Image 1 (cartoon, rainbow, N blue to C red):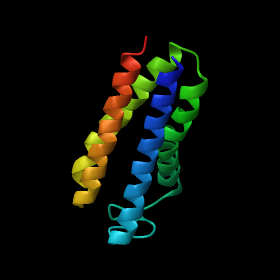
Image 2 (cartoon, rainbow, N blue to C red; image 1 turned 90 degrees about the vertical axis):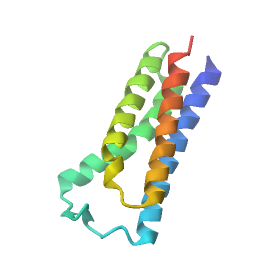
Image 3 (cartoon, rainbow, N blue to C red; image 1 turned 135 degrees about the vertical axis):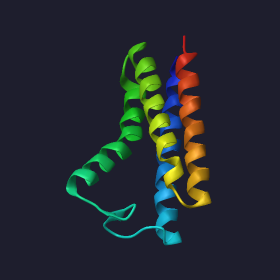
Image 4 (cartoon, rainbow, N blue to C red; image 1 turned 120 degrees about the horizontal axis):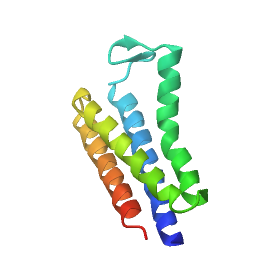
Length: 121
């Protein structure tokens, strides 16, 4: 059982790093305008929602190691499916091939998270 916890935690770390890599590459590629997302001026509410979204993998890393089974199994499944759907919806909005590639890699990590949590007995 502990092996699955470690694998799930590793998948959440990997997802977080993919998200961060995408942000860094977006800055270096020039696909980023300070204070804007998609041509829209950022508000404090938008920044708060972005912070919450980026904290999800970090919180899941901690929860995967601390919550009791079977609760953590279902939390992993639900959160990974949520992020999978969220990223699928956003996929067409990213202009760069590197962005699309990284989102697909992130989707792969979400699928693996659901698979490992679903098969956890």
